[in-house]
Length: 487
Image (cartoon, rainbow, N blue to C red; front, side, top):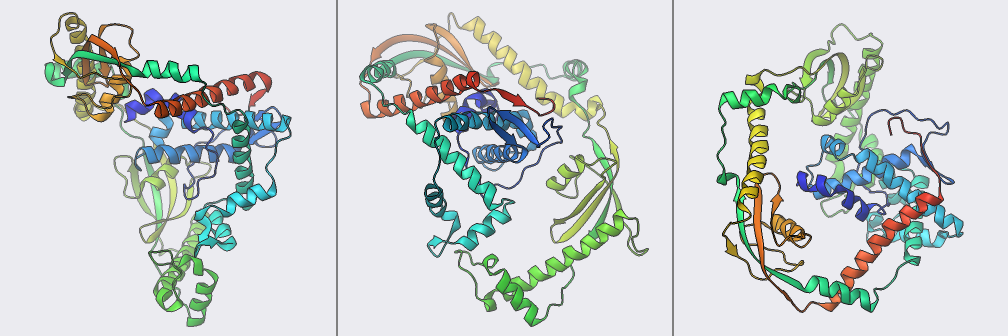
């Protein structure tokens, strides 16, 4: 999945760049510190429109959320960095601003009624089947959004779609016929699969050590951090019945059953008491944090010293990420809840990464060595075999085919895509690092195609190409300035 995403990320961005609604529940995903050259705090200016740091952060959050869904919840900050998500977010924000400049030049706008209708139609703000203003305000607040920013983002998103809708064009007959002809071509091939089982690798220590010696900088220990932590154990608020009931009334929207129905006071009472206890614990932790910062901790309260790293983290991943951003000038993290306790962190020393010995790095070296050597040897074997191989014969395949015997679904789609883009009758196609497919086209024919489905594909292709070319044209029309240090 990672390999596929990295290979196709530039195309992925094209398909999602106009998804500009704020993602409720996506959460805030932070990044490093940047310097800004604009006094107003803008990260870029496009024509007459400034892009704020908040908008850039929101674009990053949206992209992060979408990638996380694609990766089924397994996307993280390291992957985001390798995918260049910060640059993608800035690029997306700039493209949106280009469209908004065009809208302004034609005096296009979103009316208050259009905005209101769009908001009250969002079921995330529904309570008992109807839009709830109280829930609307609460949900935005819980996600760190204010009403003004959210509605401005909504307005911009709707305006972008309104502009693009003006340029929609239905496919013409010639386009449909051309696409139908191309998609109706069917190839019958002879093919042979080459994989890791086809080759033999020398994985002796001598071979591995030689590989490691040339790449020692790739095998470093994780940086570690000497810290002190102040832990606040749970305490009781000792709330009275009146205080419990008052807290429930003030926060009743927080107390719901599994179906989303607000609980009655009697049903919610234990949960309300727990919330009050948690609030009291957090308050006590904040007192400790202030005393810790001022070096005025009570003698009976002693911070716990520990060393944390990616390989040894008794806290949690989110807190470790925050620790990596600490500096000598700002060494504290305010109390964070880990399990049922609140933990305050002070950075003492940052220990940089150091090279691992061969024995320490051996497992990682073996994995990298096998991957690299398999890929190289498979391609060499493919080059030596492609002219004379004998393999199995496929049924007729079209560009819309989704399966090939011996390949999984993802491999089959990638193989067929490359096969129909190839200009050679005989050749080979590399699928990742562990599989190569030799092929020889032995016959072709024209098959009937689904005209309705083809028309839809032509329409999508036209829209995608138009959006891309529109952006390129607008880049020549409006000036673009970036104030982000390093970009």
